[in-house]
Image 1 (cartoon, helix red, strand yellow):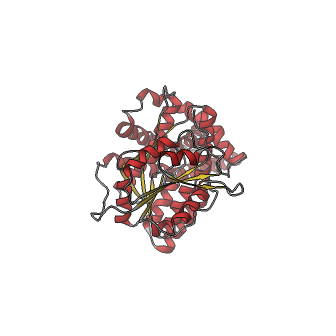
Image 2 (cartoon, helix red, strand yellow; image 1 turned 30 degrees about the horizontal axis):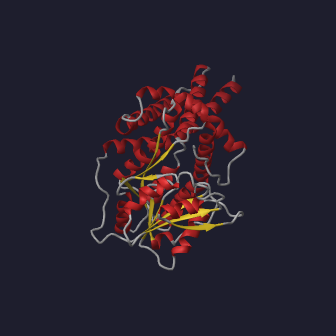
Image 3 (cartoon, one colour; image 1 turned 90 degrees about the vertical axis):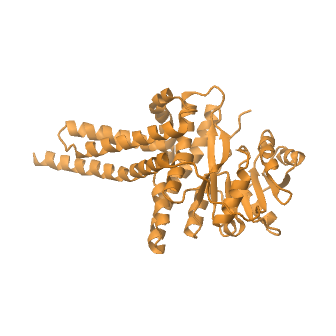
Length: 401
């Protein structure tokens, strides 16, 4: 009898500990999404001074097939004082020639030992250092800049003297599958809903990889030369600790398109989410420590935001924990962990439904939400891969042709 009681007590403690650990990211997600529901469209503070001189950097690796579309959305937004620089990084195609033909300046970099977007961007910054702009804007080679995005980002960067992140969303491919729609929704929650909630609360957000603007003095204060597979998140941490947390500018928009090929989508997601998890594990403690040392609540807020894992992983962990707690309760352990986890599940559900209702229902059918369990099952091998064979090197996502 005593052995059974001890075993039940141990199970109770373990399940309760899991429930309490999950409460942190779940509560953060719920708070951010709830704040976003209360947010109203309002312009981010801009300066009334003359428009700053801008340099737009586009790192590109074998992007000859699609870079013209990206450049064509940026050139009309530039003045005669601005520059558009394509960094053709370790290219084996005509990326540089295509960029020059359409009106951009292109430089070429060859270094097979040091590959990755970070190295390319650092090379680009070095090339413009002799005559630096007031603001540097970074855009991926497969993205579309919506009208006025460049000016909005530049003005906010100058006014705030901080990094600025545009709204970066993924459009669904033609004839999208339910998996595409759920992926687009997860992207929307991460890159629009949660940053909108943080902005409503007066807190900084994270950089998301493209549509990023930096005052020259700020971007030169950190090193970009690395092969980090999520260099944008790392840059967010470094700049925040240095005193330059990121501002979210929802009015500036940059869009990409989800890949149609399943293997390409898997490669893209693996790089993003393995990098996210690695950054979560290494940088959350660093930010929390820095927040105490510097007595800065904004760093703690960034740490809490970073503590939220990818949405599908959070739901998968919760589902497994809730099922285990229900099974344990039926066998005679305490029902308290199951009650805690049930409440957390409700908070997750309200967060997702609320985010979809306000921000996504025009693009994503409500029936698509029924495919969420299947989407999570598709992602489980990806997360197991983080434990078994973690991706640590930058790999370019192949483009649809």
